[in-house]
Length: 71
Length: 514
Image (cartoon, rainbow over all chains, first blue to last red; front, side, top):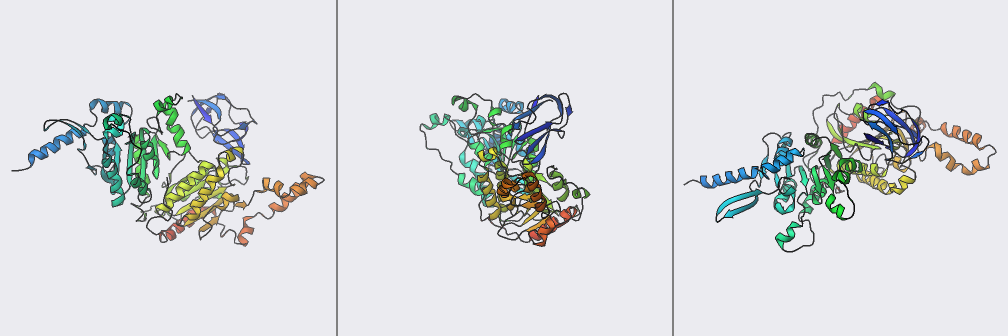
């Protein structure tokens, strides 16, 4: 089980995957608005999403866990 | 009467030295997933090139005049070659007292540092354990305590201004060992088997916190905070990266990196470059494929991928010429300079200036990172340090404005006080402040007084947008040249050819600090 940490601080606009989705390291899993940009967050690992950990539209800190990936 | 007897004794002692800490300790080293120091040296250097110095240095036990036991010193030192170029090397032998000082001979630790310094060759430190650091055991053997000192550290420090220094953390390294890794131009740690800390878990537990060594100093932490440049998955990869790093470097600051053979056409054009930057300025794009497309094929060696991530940094060749490459990564704060990316940028600029590597800078910088986190992190302090590194550098620069270039960090796209080559892509967008955000600040009073602020805002924005074409900037020579992105490789290779003849060997006017 790996926790994907947010690479940036900003506002979590939306998750781009649901629990159960199979992802690869370059799969875009969430969209964060930061520095007036829409920044996609990449999965970094291969595996299946087991949990989404933050609320859409909430403020996210850099390093905050965004989701869990079963690897 | 020959000297065979004495030579036989030398051979016997050499044989004893090659046992290192003994079969049991060597087996334990292997069981923990680590090579022995001698295996490491063999794996790193050109085959058969290791010239050991101090082979039979160690502590001996005698019965009268007869040697009955011998433990080698726990540093192996000497020199050899990598790709037929000389390097000095020193490696800790963890199988002997965990690499601690009480089994070391200080002069032997310093010898390879002096060798590198005086004969002007790179030095590689294979650190495993306390790296020659102290142990309270010495209290009993010496019978007194002492004010801490680092005899010979001045040589290690001088080497940073003189020869390429590589520090590899290959086990749990603490204290002086950690310092010897960090005081380098390029440092690595091996994932899972290497940890770095000022003091290890037992000492930290005594201070009231129980942590594992991986939690305290694993690569999950230190390859992401800039303690080391990179993590790798195996010792073999650590050695491969070391060889590769040194391939871009001159032997010392007294030489220039020179030109390597280049099989890649310097005029090669990559069609992808024409459309990789989205027209929507809120959308990001991947910078690494741009870097890969313009350097000599396969020559980009990234340094520090996991820390300071809004700046991509590394070494590459253009038409065979070694250069440092800096590039913004829009995926991290839109390419804005954070505290750690500013530190990373300063470190790479200092490296380039020390070893005469021209600098190629691909810019998409909306400014410094803004917001509470950025202020809390003292971003501007690290930012101005990066700006000083840029300003004080003396090697030639080639800057390519790929997209955004705003604010103080944007202004540091090149050294301001001297000539540099600069190009912009047609996607270029620049200014003191971006219109979004900057408009509200500049027209606050007008907007507050307006009957319909939204309508007025749109009118002002339309007026401002009408004059933001990069072509208008080129009219005023604010940007020197707007280019077809597909020509970038050709133009940067041309720059590298020009820069090669503008490099001056010798120590940098800004002595390198780690």
